[in-house]
Length: 257
Image 1 (cartoon, rainbow, N blue to C red):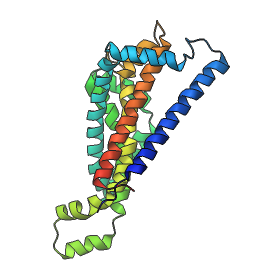
Image 2: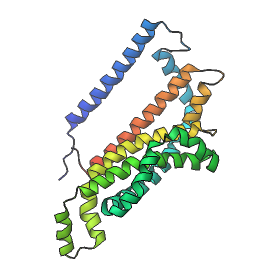
Image 3: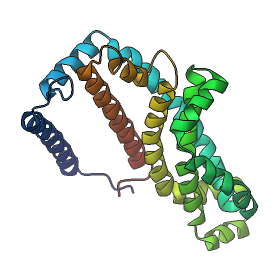
Image 4: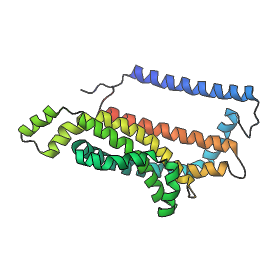
């Protein structure tokens, strides 16, 4: 039976999150007051809140956020899906590991900020380029933790199932995948936050829609600092929401730990 988080535990989590948010706003307000910086450099929380509400109210942020959300969803699905397959292959074949590992490490060591303009040059500034950037940045951590999770399965259990004439599919679905799920979801938690970064970086490289584009607009000629802060808060909130969604799915499939 899966151990569920008790209601009191959930309330405690909510209270801690609320306390952290209040502390952040108070520290921000204190910094504005102590530093004496002008609003175009460091706007007050209430100024940003008003701009955030206005930008959501007139559809400015949502027009861009929905594009970014689509890019994140597609990029995460492609990157994580390919990573699961590659991670399993890396775990079960030393030849595959030796062949792919140098390329994986080299790709991970190359900053995505440097790759994004090149991908935009090859694939244009549409959604395909952003999805590729997201998939690339998601792939490595998910593949590695999948490999580690699969390798952590007791080989004696695998041999026992083989002796019972279990098929490869049964071994994967009944033993290896369930045993590796905690590790896999650890990678997915990292991957979903990296997908947000990938989408924003891809939008910086080119495009006319997306929260990354809105950041460029806000810091452009008008230099609308409150809108810039509002967009950054939206990006952070989007990342937190998607991370929370992965945690919810993990608790459903694996159980609270």
